[in-house]
Amino acid sequence: MYHTLKEETIMASRSSNRAAVPEAKSALDRFKYEVASEIGVPLKDGYNGDLTSRQNGSVGGYMVKKMIEAQERQMSGK
Image: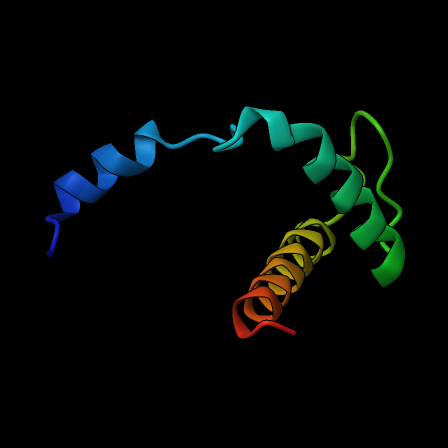
């Protein structure tokens, strides 16, 4: 199904950074700091405005990569 630009804009404005499963929020936060540490991004509690978009984006991107790998392993039975 294709959406018009207007529909996509409306859908995007409804999205937020809330966890799809609120009970997983603390686990995702711990995972975020674990990933940041692994890739050398000095993420700290609270304000991180001193970090670049590239640094912050690399944390999120690597989190997604690791979650996809874990799901693929689970689906393959390994």
